[in-house]
Length: 160
Ligand code: ADP
Image (cartoon, rainbow, N blue to C red; front, side):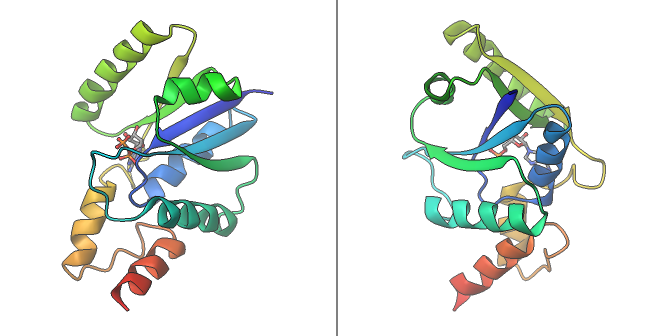
């Protein structure tokens, strides 16, 4: 079975992330969405909230063969632990390429058995980032066409 790990902050999951998952499912039998926990980073949502939104979004989109997990160490160590050797990432703009290139080079240095596979963002969702979604929502912009319903629901819950 071909398993791929899709690591990221997912703060929150967006339609852009979902597009990458759908593309990956055309090639891999199973995708594991891995919420990376970094104690030094300040997130909008808690780890539990992120996982809840991802799980609900996967049900909403009827995406089987996708699991959700979180990990606070090196993503490469997580891959080793579950015996996976492919990491998925998404590419939007040129600056993504620069960032992903250095990440891929560092990963190659640490463990050359793990391959990184990149998917190009869909033109309709390529402008979406979790941080821009948070900023738009905080400034009263309707983001419901850019994120799954579960995210809109969570934003509203947080406001209560
Ligand atoms: P990270 O902090 O690890 O970059 P993100 O959740 O921001 O976590 O992104 C995880 C991965 O998903 C990255 O490879 C990023 O480029 C990709 N990604 C994020 N938003 C989109 C989008 N709108 N379309 C395609 N890929 C995306």
